Length: 358
Image 1 (cartoon, one colour):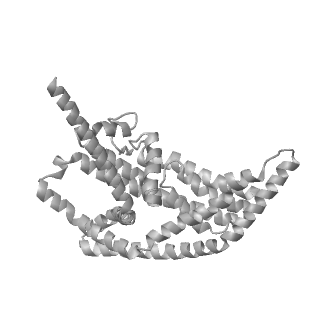
Image 2 (tube, rainbow, N blue to C red; image 1 turned 180 degrees about the horizontal axis):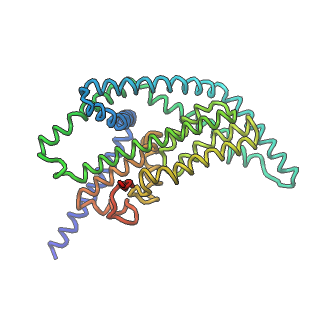
Image 3 (cartoon, helix red, strand yellow; image 1 turned 90 degrees about the vertical axis):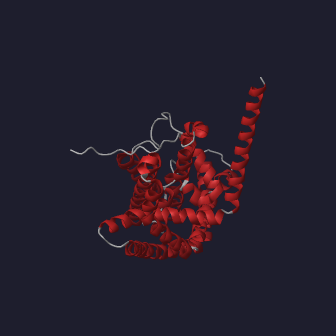
């Protein structure tokens, strides 16, 4: 009897300590948000740069030169795209007050049209509750927040460079310490490879989505097509709702600039691109399962987005899958991984579909 009570009390103490540790970690991440975001962006870019570095090394190019080539290409791409997007964003910011005024006029005209049809709607409903003006302002704030992250570009690129240099020697260090890492940590190696594959494929899919949206908006004559294509590229990382959020400002701008018919075409373009990508191409490359329940995907988006802003929302899935893997590695926390997982816990964290060799 005494031993049972003692075990229950010790278990309660461990739970309290665990909860306190989690709260302290969350508070610490929130306080050090700028540093954490910087390292997350650096790690994300390093993850994308790892495959070409490894490929160049396989072509007998020294590690240092391989990293230099990859970083040079990355820098050129960032500068060229950044300049074009910066110019578009500057013009959009300058014209934002005019756009907001035109949106207000469109809303008032729409209310008058509804009243003429016998539908009585208060203006305050559209101006305060729906408020398309605030959507455009939020879009500008979102892009401004992203530009503040990229203001530390030099530090980010230096961090990526050192990570890539370390990646080249890390497997050797791991084999030296552990003997055979594939034998000691098979799940970790598998998880790391699948995470890298997920991020690379997702990036290329997002890039394709952004390019198609940019071309479609340019053909329709919508202002700032490159800006909206870049927004589609970024928000495509956010599951389920990212592509919808990306479409809203472009559709509103099309209504103000070109009329309702063109806005329908803009919305149709977003719908077609995201349907083909999300339901045809992406499942073939990655499989349909992320190993996370739909509820967890949504909650992780809110949690990481609230904690780390836009970068947290973009990386919410990889961050949550990393936590799930950490919980799976210990018997005492495996139940948390089960709660985070999909309906079949015995599935791997990522289930990429592989084409059978004929």
